[in-house]
Image (cartoon, rainbow, N blue to C red):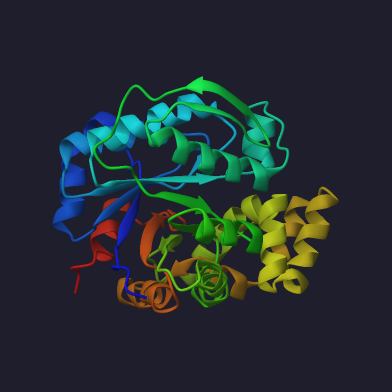
Length: 327
């Protein structure tokens, strides 16, 4: 693998968006190379990156992820082209299926054929960003005569969020890389092997959102971390992912209790070692070592997501303690 190693941070940072300029400048000073936005129930994915494009030219910008369902294809292409035009050569668009909770329950859009939908959006973006008129029937939507009115100087790389083999192979075959989430450093080796195999020897970027809480109060972190794990790993796409990773046996008691409506029992059923695997915690030095293990196993770009699981933890202290140039 010859891809450059890129240490990144999840945005938006705490506080109102208009207050982030100095913080973004400090991220770059601290050695972070990238910022990656997400889109669920907070800020949209593009606005924090548009501000950063103007405020801090040292940072590369990426979305991890924008759901394939929640914008129409042409609207999404316009957003992608606009940000690529604002930050030429330093923007990457990450697309994924998201989940039935976000797509269907929160946005009222049927969560149907996620593999085909993501594949079609990736193909449409390739077509639209070429500048040619698109008149084409994809499996999940039709486009009749759309042509982009804006031509970015550099077409951004398109990354695909993947959990299991189908999406990971799509990311490798038709995308410029994969975005991965909610997995251990050990799990990365299994995921990266699928990407490498499907890429046929071509280097592909692998971006990992890594959940981190630099606190030595292990029991506090584990107790709070179980709430985050239960919230995600009971979502069907994440449950299937962790079955594929081999955690089905240890997580089945949690899934059973959750389906029975017993949230307290579900939390209690999560073993401490699962928290330790999926959430990086410990002293800042221990956390940096654990983050390095993700890179060692195949990640090329990190997007650290700092979890305030310890009430004593201050977000910006954690940002500084985990920085690439920290000692």
